[in-house]
Image (cartoon, rainbow, N blue to C red; front, side, top):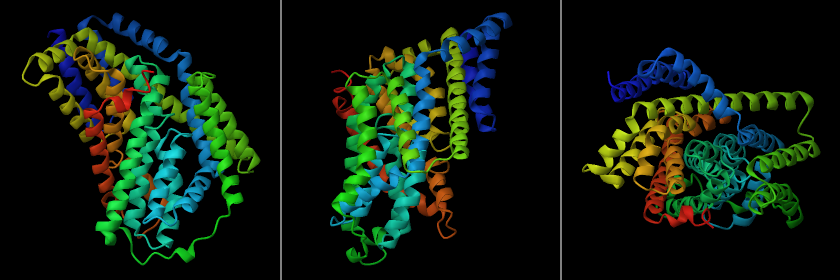
Length: 437
């Protein structure tokens, strides 16, 4: 077999192994090792896997992963998410479907200090959904809003997916963070418009009963300000330090984790046993992410050795498909894969194949990364996988709440995300103007 044939068969075998349930990192490592062994020999494959482990994981940048993960877990534990929701609930209580809009805004702010969509889904399913159902909103709409707005956690910086993309594409993490701000604001705006349109034209989808403003617990200005202080301090510490040039991404993560730790201690929501549990969970998440990155790096080198990316670039860019046809096919494939596989795994499988083609097409790789993250995040809401949906179901522990009900509630927000994807394609400056300053 020629190297190109080996690489092509390797992609097919990888998809098959994932389909039958083999762990994705193990599948990628096995396929890559066998591929390199067939193209060269077993000795080269053995040496390459050691070199990949050394080269891909020793970067100082990777310290940002456990730091942002720990910060997100501490913030979720300390009740900052509930405080964020309470503040926006007070500000928007007179707006039609105001609690839905408050959930979107609160999720956007919470995203700027966590960077993990699942953390947002867990927190707001316990905070926003009971409050919304108490005020006459349907469970379908309430859970759909939480599921939809939770995806902002992977777009608005800091974002774990942006870090992974920056590593694989060899782009600046700081620039990728900046690139997520415009699309994040756009998506939050589209979610707000979606909620207002649903409330106006399909009130039965949104409300079960007449909205009762009298049932709101009045939050005084002093209490609202007190609840807002920890949020603003963390945002200033992480984002202000990062974009003000005081911190690099790793230092910003460390500052944010320390700030979240101080808040959790001051609020007496953290004891020794809980801290140990969070540290173990942080370690587990970090190890799984870094193992996937190592496997994807090995897979990328095997593909480069086989020549498959070069052949794909020639096929897409010189044939009838063209660069834009490639982009549309790529995004559609990512959305379809999102129905079955988690976000990070999709990126680690697809980017080693797609990035060389995107570079040959002379696409802006920062813009390409934003499109990738938005498309990947749609998979958090689509059946049958829909990780955010299952997270909400698990967090709610409500026997009357079905998974299908949450998927139906999230469907309008999937349409909003598709609209955001189209807008960013047509107007790429939304994603790149801050990153290129």
